[in-house]
Length: 241
Ligand SMILES: *[C@@H]1O[C@H](CO)[C@@H](O)[C@H](O)[C@H]1NC(C)=O
Ligand SMILES: *[C@@H]1O[C@H](CO)[C@@H](O)[C@H](O)[C@H]1NC(C)=O
Ligand SMILES: *[C@@H]1O[C@H](CO)[C@@H](O)[C@H](O)[C@H]1NC(C)=O
Ligand SMILES: [Zn+2]
Image (cartoon, rainbow, N blue to C red; front, side):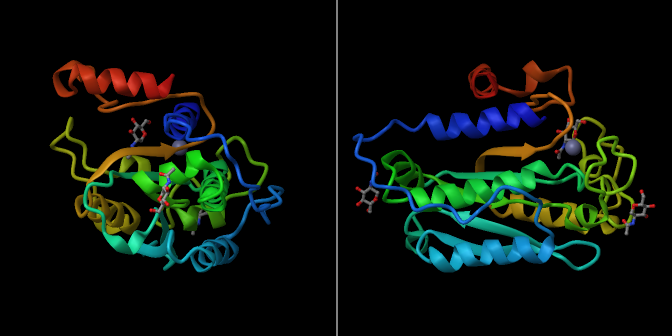
């Protein structure tokens, strides 16, 4: 799913019509882009963004992993306390496979970039003025901590959660209604389901690593045309190009 998801991410950014070409100097990022952040450091970076931009960023957790790590979400939108009802909700989820770690870093950098650009870059200002963005850099923080840096075979641990479950195979599946994943084994999946059901996300990206795949709903069915309208299918194809 990696490249499709990135394409979607950039499509979202570039789809926003550029405003007047006045660009105030962006504040330089303190990110050095040279290593992965473990749980505490990632949490501190998210927290410091929320503190630095209290009107545009809000940090919360949707629940905890098996080992008790918070599943942090940074919400980014202009004037977030104003509760603007018709602002579309968009979410990004990274690191669902704990050893697919690039998305975890990239989503943090995206958050940093969006916030630094607000009121400086007209395109980003307009994006934050019109979109309610939710960034969950790691759905599998336990897996990440168990992964080995440099292992590209996926054999040295970290893909699954701390109960050995693949989170990406643990959602109820509408095409196999008889399969009932045991949600008590995957608190990360339960948290995600509750979060999805209590919001109205219009567009989502789930970022993986390791292969070049672009999936769009409903990707585990060959009966796709019965389930997705032609218009939304075209939109998905367009976003994935
Ligand atoms: C974004 O919102 C701010 C505050 O309401 C407003 O001053 C600004 O003109 C808006 N900018 C864009 C590009 O939408
Ligand atoms: C960490 O990964 C190893 C190797 O796959 C696995 O045997 C072990 O159960 C994992 N531990 C946790 C806590 O996930
Ligand atoms: C999990 O992975 C499969 C592909 O292997 C994909 O079809 C599916 O959409 C993914 N599910 C989630 C919830 O990310
Ligand atoms: Zn994956």
